[in-house]
Each structure stands twice: as C-alpha cells, then as structure tokens.
Amino acid sequence: MRTIKKPCEIIVYYNKLTSAQRQLKANSMFENALGPAYLTLIDTGLYSDLEIEVHGAKFFVHKCILTSRSEKFKVMLLSDSVNAMREQLTNKMVVTNPMVTPDTFRAMLQWIYTGECEMSDDASDVLPLLSLTDEYLLPDL
Image 1 (tube, one colour):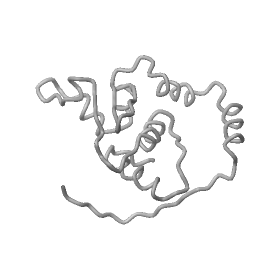
Image 2 (spheres, rainbow, N blue to C red):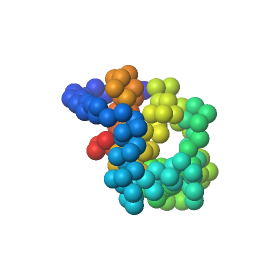
Image 3 (cartoon, rainbow, N blue to C red):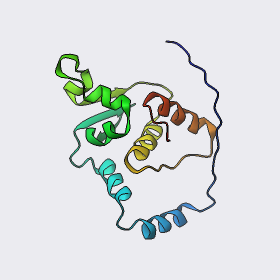
C-alpha cells in the first residue's frame, strides 16, 4: 500500500439549529422533493440491486444511483463481462477499511443519493469521510 499526501483546506460550516429544528425545516422545505424520496430508498432498500456490508452493517443500494455519481462504483459495477469484477457478478460488496464505520459509509451514501449529508463537528469523524471521497472519487463532497 502506498501513501499519497495532498494538501487540503478543511472548512467546517456549523449549523446552530437543534436536531428538532432541522427536522422541522426539512419536513417543510422538502415536502415533495427528490432528496427525501431517495433517502427512503437507502433506509428501506426498496428495489435495491446491490448489498454493501460495512463491519456487519448492511446497506441495500442501487447500482444506477451509485454509478451515476462515482467513477469507482462505475468501474466496479459496469465492467464488460470479460473484465467483470466480483461485485458485479455477486451483487455484494464488503468494505473492510478499519477507519470506515457504518455511520461514515452511510453519510457518504446519503451524499450520493441526496447531495447532502450530516457531518459531525468532530474532526476524527470527518476525516474518514473525506478519505472516502477520495477513494470513491466524489470531489464535490
């Protein structure tokens, strides 16, 4: 394994709303929006065609959404049949990176599905998420 170092600037925007205020705002603001509907797809796994396991937690996700937002997922899941990767053949994927928790992976999925995610104020929680953005080629997160 090689280590790649790159300079970066981390800007954290802090929202002073309580979780109840955020939920009220979300309910009124996005009442018929796509974001909450897509978030429901993650929560329910409805019509999923890929299972991703992260340290015992399972996420039932949708290849069409993942491949439309991430070049890594596109390569893993849409290769031609000669070069098909295991994930494409089995419709299962296991994330073994010890730094990535189920909550961190879910935050990345939430970003992929909705364009938004809640992040902790704690840098030790944010850094693994930033690492995932590099791994899954999500420069806009």
